[in-house]
Length: 200
Image (cartoon, rainbow, N blue to C red; front, side, top):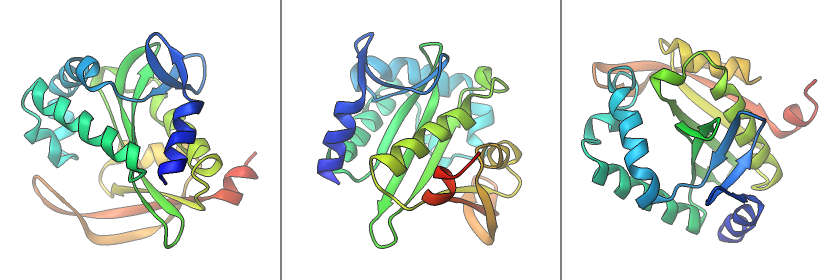
């Protein structure tokens, strides 16, 4: 995976002092620059805290810019070793959220996508485009066979993203996520490489 990370790094374009992967005229993905991006990302989390905390337990532990900077340093280390891939979502060159391959499973050549979007960017069709970009990266560069999205059954927005991006609902798992108010059943969405390549 380390070699793959180096290949991915070379495919990102150097624009506006950021390594970016352009999806369309509005949406792109960028490798984090911890010291530079931490403040803007923390502000986005902070102003979206009410909506994000319901579904993402880590939000309550992100209390200062330093917490976000530390996180970004960690995910860049993981990128360097090929453990995971965390990218900033840019909408018209402004940070809008993050998307990631949380980890890669070599046993079945699969990966799981995680994502979040700042509240003020909801409703612009950003996330399903970001997911499509990650699928391109995953299938073409990381050579994985299956990509998964896990979403709490009652997280309507996350489930809608998976459906709009063309993922298949495989089923649900009981008590799959421990959130702030307890356990939630979860939906498992998947797309296979051949399905993605043969989509219309």
